[in-house]
Length: 445
Image 1: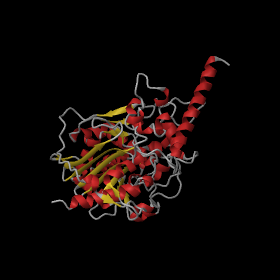
Image 2: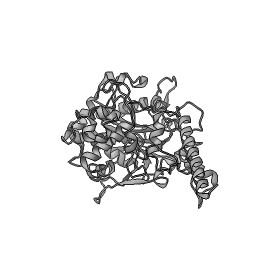
Image 3: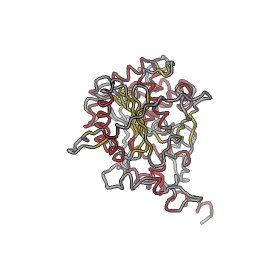
Image 4: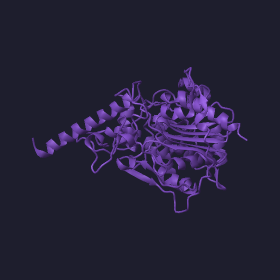
């Protein structure tokens, strides 16, 4: 065999192995199983990527898929920038604004009963149960609780996963409020390249609220699900010589086909956020990383730049590629709790925050069958609870959260690396834990 042909064959085999390995890791992480607990899987104690070079059995690589296999994943989610191409979200050149602090020692002892359980659990115990890497609580504008575990540190950054969607949804809602995007127009009015796809006949509002009818499955346990074609297109990894599929997010989005009827039911699909990112870029001339910096990140007094992972042509992954520090994510949540204001600046229009808090179509949401989220809705890529006072949440796989509870004057941000991707693995602990903390803090003078 000629050397070039042999090299191509080796590349094809390598890429097949990578994709199978990555798919297997996510499929496993989406189904019930027995895993080492938080202490036994602690990435700092296991010594991932320590040494020059690290030992072979403690080396994490992007190009072979090992970076997203548990428990190595617990190191990776705090170190994506070391493993793959990224684009910066600049904080600007101004001085950071300090977060006021009034740390409390009594929060760890707060108890609650997890959903479906009989025995109670303390707040402290809930952190290990959810494989928490970092958590910060703000109450009435002050940090009352802050903890870090594993390899995440206060000056580190962590993958936000699908919390990214809520950040990008906020940018989209801002442009709608400003009249730069008409939410009732079709996506194809802004991105003609999508006219032949399912998105061409969907309105921007249907994309924002994820009520699009798409032939697209995010079932990680199904190797034939469209999520794998999306991942293959977006991945910056080299493709086999005979690969003929999409090579970027933009190319993949044009292949998504219609299934069902737009506007009839909620369906959580990452590609909606990638489409919104394309609309935003077309309208503003800025990709979502640039616009986030200009409109929000450089105005929040954050301590650090953030960053997005990107595809092979540098397109930010709008559906899940944001990485930030915990404290800066808290600043974002606190700004929304204060009706879009921070340090005297109106960063996000109050009308946008009000609209999110009112929620979306509850009947459309109910059709999705989220048993633990009955009475909730979805608006501008935020999950809106049934709580009095309009509490709302950003949610990402493996346990990422922003929880804004205006009535309790509370913001919770959490980064985690739970071995199970699905939020259903975290919700039985997370939902009652957050409610218990809100009740506790609400009673304070």
